[in-house]
Length: 153
Image 1 (cartoon, rainbow, N blue to C red):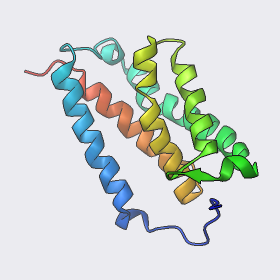
Image 2 (cartoon, helix red, strand yellow):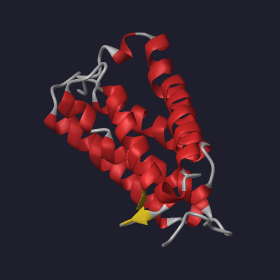
Image 3 (cartoon, rainbow, N blue to C red):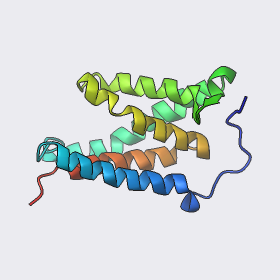
């Protein structure tokens, strides 16, 4: 069974996974802007505090908790460190918990929409054995959502 132990990490700036994620982020932001009502993120953009929380604080806290603590501990369990189609059990469980957290403030379908981004963040946590990359990507995801949701001329 494959495990997550890797002796060499890919070079981040040459990692095709990173570039695919960046392109997908832009495409998702454009799709959100086209498909959803104009100004859907106006409440988040209503103050500098809201913007800072959404783009900086929430990603840092959520990634530290979910990818750092929870996924990190789950990866210690042999059964959850195994991968199936490239996704570890630890990543899947962590991502399902992440979706459950979003059920607090979002309708079920919208909360489920964070599953794929969460799996991507978990992938990078495992790929690089660090939490700062998922934090930075989460900030990018939230900033993209915010920009897509602003009224455009």
